[in-house]
Amino acid sequence: MLFRSWIYGIHAALAAVANPARDCRRIVLAETAKREMETRVAQAITEAHKALPGRPSVERMSRTDMESLLPPSAVHQGLAVLAQPLGETAIEDIVRDCIEKSDAAVVILDQATDPRNVGAVMRSAAAFGAAAVVIQDRNAPAITSALCKAASGAVERVPFVRVVNLARAIGMLKDGGFWVAGLDPVAGRNLAEVDLSGRVALVLGAEGRGLRRLTRDTCDELVKIPLDGGADSLNLSNAAAVALYELARRRP
Image (cartoon, rainbow, N blue to C red; front, side):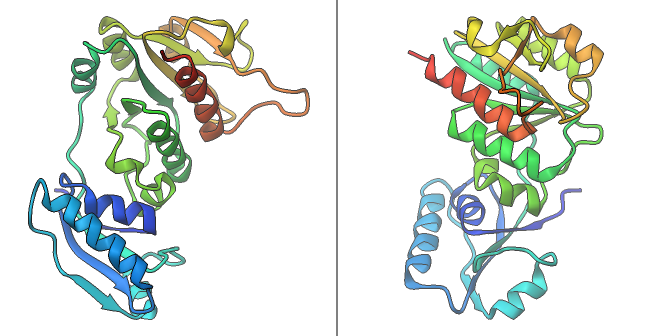
């Protein structure tokens, strides 16, 4: 059964309201919200209505009443949406959607468990036009309010693909024409030194643990982000942003 949950924060909530694929049940706006925020919510509702009418009326309430609906310490910025989860996307769908594209990027996360870190990766994926973020279902975070807030609306734009077997999913991407690069701080070549044209899947491990052996063995090549001697590694979301930027700047 799919359980509805609150999405809060300006960017995350507005993106959910504007997304016609998202079933929104309540839209709550703080009584103290400025007219500009009312306008932005109305614009998001109009955007959704172009594809699918049926958004609920906006509810005005005090911040105290809003906070009683949301998780403790939620930074809601005066806007929250109660919504059903988005439908699931399969890895086969991503391969099919990218098969005719000359350039495409997919981010694969190995052992990532922190929802805020994963949300930040999704935000970078949206910013640099990635086709999907793929994660192993076991121990992976659900698309919670915290993840949506960290993703700043990217959950509505970038497919979040959960797979049972990460190595098998990587194999399917390779069969679909993707070159698979695993990020490893002790790899022989820098990311900037390799050919990143065409369809590329970037595989990143959790900070500290890195890539598992089977995941490493499934990659076409291991590459590293060169760092100054003052740092041993980047955290997951920063590494994803740097790697995605490197791919994006080489696109024609």
